[in-house]
Length: 336
Image (cartoon, rainbow, N blue to C red; front, side, top):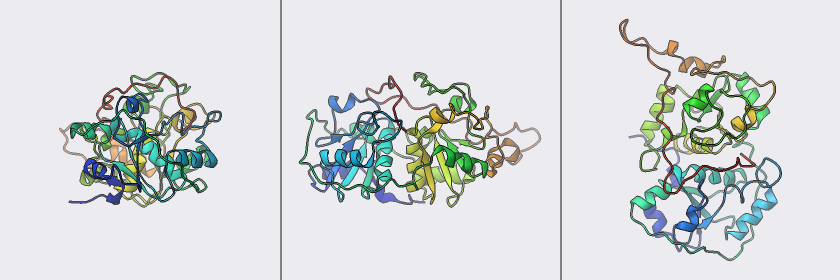
């Protein structure tokens, strides 16, 4: 059975339970539903709010290096701390926080596989005590350009026919809507997708209990069915970069893609840009090799009487319901 490329970045609920009082470990909860931490969190865990802690309050960007250093120091995180992230919705937002920490070069980052849902299913205790730790001294690196793609870089990537992955819902991908199902419209003027982008909605990476799918299932989806190449430069995007941060995590750490970046500007930026290419419909479009692979015409014919096979990623399951107390954000974030 194939294993994850970097299994060390995942820890189980058992591991977390054994390290609750470990001074070298900091457990961090990051949720979409910002009320969950107050209602109950893993004992000793601190909260990092994706809106108020990670986003610049004025520009549509992340907090700068100095603000990130201050955040880590206030949370009791030092440069050598092992930071374990978990949260709601199959760790969707935990992976987002993980990605921001990697953006600033924090080395020891892990994800608790299954997040809040797995912790609850295991019958483990919650705490309502808001904890604090002695402040540390933290020194962040300059932003790591190898994990982040900006708009002009995406445009160049697209024109070169390189691997693009749209992790939004099928309706968003086809251009039938400009925002997530059951979420408010966040302001994109145009719908559709970047030409050449394949569509694998982010829930395809996770099992019902919130844990990641096995390596063999992920390989079947991305490597065997979509013919994606681990060594080919890849960019993932969604609407503001949060869903695609989970897919970025899967590609980079679980499947071992060597050069994968998250386009955090995503559709909220691309769908409002003047002059950038957009296509609608269930097909990737464009002229990339990836588009040819995903096209029904490229699929092997079964028999004259057999129905035409659909595009591999065109009909994924709907996004999973919110876990626990999840609610849609009232306003779009200022970053990602």
